[in-house]
Length: 627
Image 1 (spheres, rainbow, N blue to C red):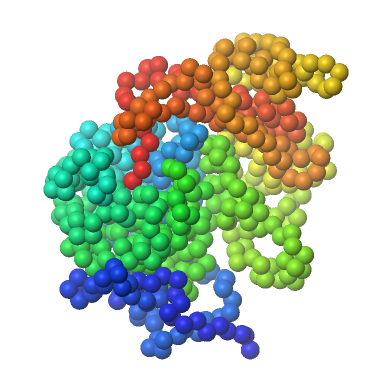
Image 2: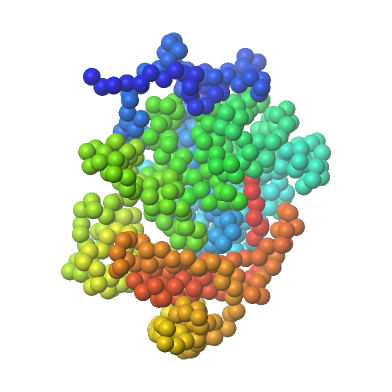
């Protein structure tokens, strides 16, 4: 007989009211809980609760997830299936605000395409009013990704952020209107500290602005308008209920409740969502969303608490990147719902194709240059690694002893379990098939370039594993538009004399440029030679290198972060803060100096691409914003 565990309902991880039905809480008059005395109900729809005060579940905490349910029809202010949770990805907006995470328009479009493959419901593509580049990137995403409907009728909503003013809202609409499902997301702060020190406005003034700007967004022809009361976690409750009720009347279809500074505990945030459901007039006519920052490391827990309390949209980013400590991580929230949704979270589910998680994570990591820590949940290098003897023994006997998620579920293949072994005799077709299994859809030119690099690696390694392939693809595909390209490199180093480097670069015009330099080491001398050619003095802020596999023949991946010495300095139009833009680059190769040079050139190319854009830019500088 299978063992079981008796879990009392009072030990449910979230202590706030569960919906009376699977969609709505009772009316405000029949349910109200003082914040000082939150209720202790488990996170289940009440129709599934037995009358007993305890619940008997299987001892297996990781049951095999059911076959994914069909994605409900998209209606801006209503979800036909009350258990469905919309995934709102803000990697391209909030995520790009991470220091050093500057993305080009091409990179943003690539990530948006990948987010569509992943199956996110809403892509917040940027802040169109902030800069010409942001406007053009959001427009391109709306035109292409926002109209790429699949065979099941799925096409992501494309959303643009705006402050509560007419110019921002007009710019957002002009950018997203080309999408099949456009959305405007507008926000204004509501907490006392923001009203007094940032906005310097009264509650009445903010209420009037919010109401009129939501109405203005609807008047432009946008029937999908999201409103966020910034810093809702620290806002006065009665004012919060009032302003949310007013924007519902004005036409808002989604109400996003941000924990902007990441200060709430899961029980507090769940209670906040429950209180809003119970006390906001007209709340049954809109979708409630969450946006949780990670300042105390609680963003994922708070997001799940909000979903348990009735939120049916969650705002997340790939790898959890974002302002300060980041946002709720898409992969963590999605896999928590997939693993525990049916048994603990009241039947919640998403439309995410989890097999694209690893690919999405890797793309964002490479494009932004923000490496994830090895112990990062779900996508970290150690997430499925087992070194302890006790753990290894259990894994050999049954993987379920120490793994609650199958790595294949997120698109990760273990190097010792891959079905195809690639080596120097492998052909182009085998390589193409393996890359396709890993989630890479490459054109013929990209495949050709990677194939010859693969063959060169395979000549030196007996076996090329998935990690090697991912590094090669990242180095070949996830690169900015070429301004300078490495042609040849020769270095001399050691204890007998000065390190020297000779570098040959090819410029955008196809001409070759050669320079030599000396330095403290091979990388330093190579970078100085590159500087002589490009004539772009920069400051190297960060340099890091990792081996993607074990062994002396491992491929090395390098990341650099640079800033121009004559850096473009701009002013944050929200805070008045001085902003200096930084640029990251990545490189990969079996030669660590070559890898380092590729990373440096990649960062320079990204910087030069932005420099060219800003020479003709007429709009204001891109501004970090946090909702």
